Image (cartoon, rainbow, N blue to C red; front, side, top):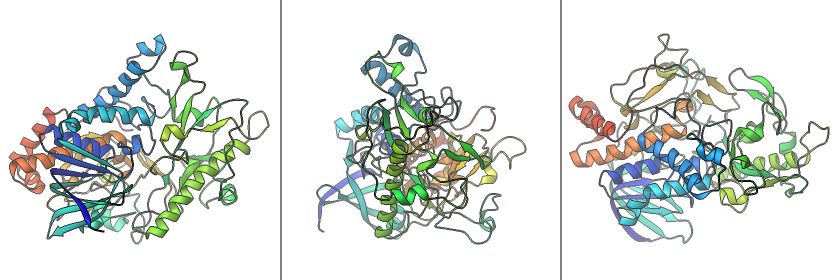
Length: 524
């Protein structure tokens, strides 16, 4: 198909997830013209189109994230205060948690985050400095040597193509789509012990197709006495009887696993303990004036709808589509099981009052616009973060490796879900860590930067570098790096390897509210 439109900007951000939004915001704040594309109709990635409320460390309200990430969080709270009839008690809470979910100090609806992200980007969009193109998927790139000249995206609605020219291209796609398209060296799946020396890496040969499970999340409310049972899913018989060899029971059951010990664990829906309803609840109706909402709303992103039967990266389009459809079928089957067969404490079966809230995720089928992708392609970087750098087990002094080229911080447990290689959870303690600039620099390409989960980490360390505030920090650092390199007429590797220039860049980050180090705190 012929290209219909030529677009030129200083910085092109391909992918509008959390890292992409942070990158676009940073580059625009630094005075650059920016174009950001996004495959779905919602920017925000795991926070919006994937419907995953933020997973964060326990100190997030005080430190351990960038200034703009904190603005995003406070913007979400302020949105509820400005637009919703909160109770007086809820309105007075400085740390308002709209959903009072167990997983986060800030559980909220995807649409709220979407609105706030648009507000944060609005000055640059309205001025024309930032062009936002949703419903665009990258399809090819033109590369000359180690330099990307252009990237072509396809409008998913019209089929027309647009070619983007830029000085820097930032890959913020969920699966690292620009890496194979541009010939950038990358890795996938599980490295071996012989490659990395990591205690939890695989024995023998590496397993490039062994990647973490991904999940189609969905939203539910509950209307007692009503029947909202969906049509029996096409693959229900398969999923109702499915049991993995390593799993303690059928996947569609209340029996799951404690990730840190792999011991069986029993869940319930509305139980006092191990309540799946409260786990990722994004709206607690008691926070709002009586009558505003008839029910709480929760997000289903549970062990029971993790899909690990095959990867969606570096496989044929046919195989990718088949696995994505089966992952949707698993989530729909879980819902149908909950509505019809799930054992209840009163001895009955099923909760037909569970209602699929399609509007919450903005789709016709009620599944999130995009699967929650935990593991991307990862660049072969100047520096790769290993388990030995951040694991509490590997650091007897209780401190993560100190990186002189830090461009940010993060903290989360090394949390790997069951994998497409049929391997179990890996869930181990992690120390508060830094994000080294070397992990954002490809070994060869001159004008490509990763801006989300696709940095120089391993299968193991991806488990702690993939969460919301870290992805935002990575994207923000990449956006500022692209701008800095344009201004200085330097390559990222030159910035990193010239101490005086590196310090200049780090001072820029500090001035913009990016924390480069941690105070003395404990591991997670």
